[in-house]
Image (cartoon, rainbow, N blue to C red; front, side, top):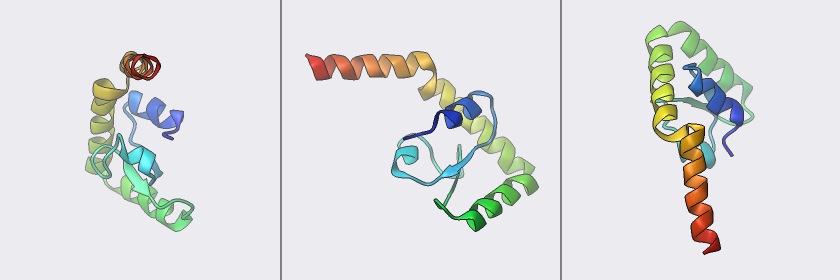
Length: 92
């Protein structure tokens, strides 16, 4: 799953670091609109946090691209429409 907090953060135009998983990669691209780290790896997470802290351009890029992704593919209206379409195909 993609945690709700990820959607909330990109909707606010904040840069996001999240665990690398198949689900997150269905919507996001590492280093384009999110920073992915190895799951259950505190050292990798710390490295990614410091990288964003020390690289304002990367921070701004991730925040901007994440927000644009939200507007294009993840607003409640878009997700609701996609769900409605899926359910209508599934139940018809």
